[in-house]
Length: 421
Image 1 (cartoon, rainbow, N blue to C red):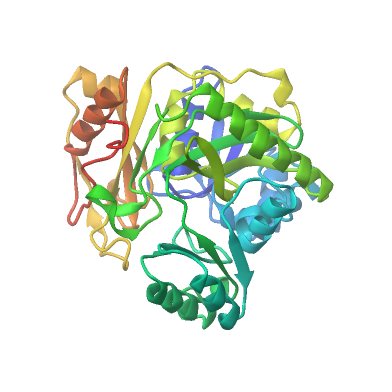
Image 2 (cartoon, helix red, strand yellow):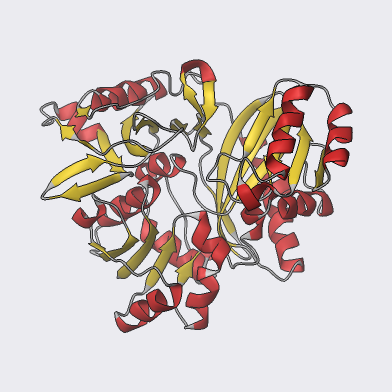
């Protein structure tokens, strides 16, 4: 099968890596890909979605998989479907579940899906008034896409009001922050859950836990994610069932009523409070780095799951996972997440241990390639993934692999999966 993957990060690399390991051989294309994806397929440079759809038609691409949120919010799925192409991801209308936090919160309220008490507004006076009614900490969110960084957890009322002021003035996130959500802080533990959907049916994947903060002990600024592990022991069958009944089913039913059936990945950010799942947010694509740990755990066909989800045939397949655990540790560049860093050559030690060779791998993200040499040139450069029969074994293996990767300024957390351990 000829498959086109949109995106350039570790998420897209890990999807391609999983597909390339299948028995059936596939021909892979990436738009734009990164400096390492060209080892798995062909990188393209076609930025216009209409031209890309024409490329897909001309080259008989049988399946397109969209990795990041921006193309989905821009309507790439609608463009491809109009040309009769098979593409995995939600329509522009359905992608508003991530594209607008205001749309998402109002959708949750309309369909009685449990979420935190909130106000959505572009009025600084109304936002301040609601802030005064809450107990700190207080959550302030920009409405639009902010690359995973548009959420501020203010530790007091003054901090919350500064965040609100800077968002509404356009100082923090430009147009993405011209409407804000202020909501109550929920005290519990956070989970990432992913439902692969075809508009009617869904498959819920093993729950993961992400580490958003830059530094150990969950300190420092929020990032796009510094590591993750799955499956988490913090979820039992009862909690999975509650998420299905209270979140996924009403969301799929609600989106059909909104004339925007949801196809693609529904990424549910859950806060578990006293055993009850509360929806923090929706995203409309796989999380990164969660995707990097879920893909290697799949034992059934990855490409077939994407294809069946894209053609409303999820009911025909059973998606299966190994009994192992996976831990992913992100390696970031020196100035992440504050500013870009000078490209640095990546040196990979030769793997001499069978254990590391068999149970670990690297998913490349912010890398470029020149004359056969890889350079770290993005914020999150790569993810070292370890597999094991326990979370500890998987974590220890992931960190062994980290020790074999070198570049100037490399930055990692040393406590990934601490919640479970």
